[in-house]
Image (cartoon, rainbow, N blue to C red):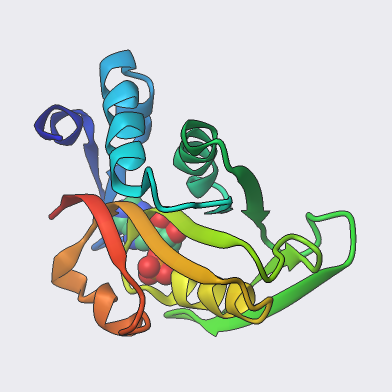
Length: 172
Ligand code: AMP
């Protein structure tokens, strides 16, 4: 993963002052790095019987769809309100300023699914925890949580469920 790490771009003060944004577009556009991300994700979850990969809008769609295809699993999008066309369930969560809501189709997951929840970056864990609650409410057999990047200094893992296996490809 050293090469992928080299390809990640730090953008200072985005989307607001004081934040160093880990920009994965520079890794996704590099063929060797994109292949390495796919290989790394596949290595973590192959042989685990995963049937669905859930990607969180929007940067989680890229790695999530690649992982789903590698595993021969289906892909499920978790989206911002009002984007999904059919019947949805939703979950709201606190952000630094105000609250945010995410949604998933009510029929997206069934009780015999083994699910990987995927997003590009773990920061505080608030978004992933909300996605976890959404998917958990549909009662799948098992849930795993995965990120490409874990910003460990923010301690986001402490805000995720203790009994769930959490993995990432790169740590900062
Ligand atoms: P979280 O605080 O874990 O709920 O993160 C919220 C969302 O913003 C996640 O989907 C991350 O992809 C993204 N995000 C938060 N902080 C960063 C950062 N420093 N660099 C890149 N993405 C970030």
